[in-house]
Amino acid sequence: MEIDPVLHLSYHRWATEQLLEAARGLEPEALHRDLGTPNRSIFGTLAHVFQADQIWLGRVLGQSGVVPVRVEPEQGIDALQREWSPRLAAWTDWARGVAPEAWTRPVSYLHSSGKE
View (tube, rainbow, N blue to C red):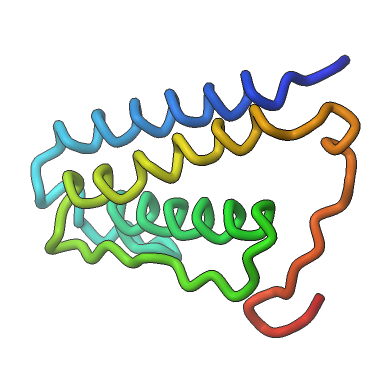
């Protein structure tokens, strides 16, 4: 089965926007409640995924050492969406420019620990 990367990243953008919209509907207490998970709360989990999205976008763009923007809980969902939306658009913009034969090439990067 062949996968259309542009379609996949367009879906990623849509799904992320749906999650942010759903989170916007939560009361602050529910959004920030400590759930005993590694990222503690719903907001913490969304912020973590946002940071990972930034790091991987930097990697596919060939940017080393990307330091992700942090959105703190007190900044809220609106700030998270403001920061995330342009990066979601950047993913699909990047994908549209990738030649089909380049989709299978490995992405070289240094892990945050310094390992390749």
